[in-house]
Image (cartoon, rainbow, N blue to C red; front, side, top):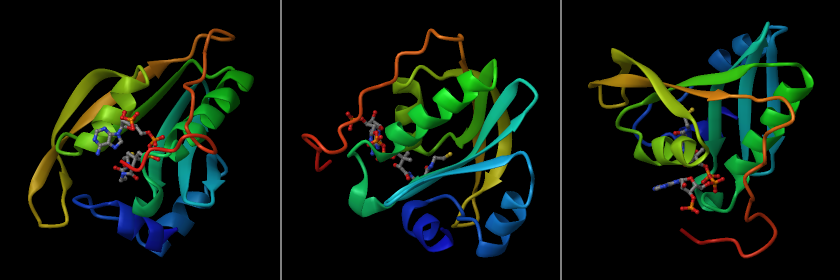
Length: 150
Ligand SMILES: CC(C)(COP(=O)(O)OP(=O)(O)OC[C@H]1O[C@@H](n2cnc3c(N)ncnc32)[C@H](O)[C@@H]1OP(=O)(O)O)[C@@H](O)C(=O)NCCC(=O)NCCS
């Protein structure tokens, strides 16, 4: 997972294997795996937080992250979660586009929150998706059909 994250996180500092294993030690943490990516989330009470989402660059824009997010939303609905939240670097245009296309809304900004790979700082945009029980229509994924090459 750390190796995949290292390939996927272009500007962001990837997590180390130690970061990943200590996060996964929490009983609130859930990993959703895929052959080419993974999502790590924690669910506490009625809030779910996406802690990491990565798709291997060789498989990006083929629906992997959409499929993982849809699985998380289904899990969240089953557990009565009211909203999903996450932080994403302002400069991370691909992730910003991904979440906004999936109806996440900006709800806050944390200035200088991230230190990027090159040592510069970037703001974190706080995004949120309200989970309306039984109302969510999963985004279609292109996995297994007409996958885009990006
Ligand atoms: C963001 C990320 C997880 C998306 O994964 P993915 O498997 O490629 O996403 P999907 O194929 O399911 O969805 C693709 C959609 O995301 C958006 N998107 C992804 N990359 C994009 C890019 N470079 N430019 C614009 N939009 C992009 C688009 O809406 C795209 O839909 P389209 O291909 O129909 O235009 C992936 O780019 C990644 O691993 N990035 C590095 C790690 C990261 O930033 N994680 C998020 C921080 S929590």
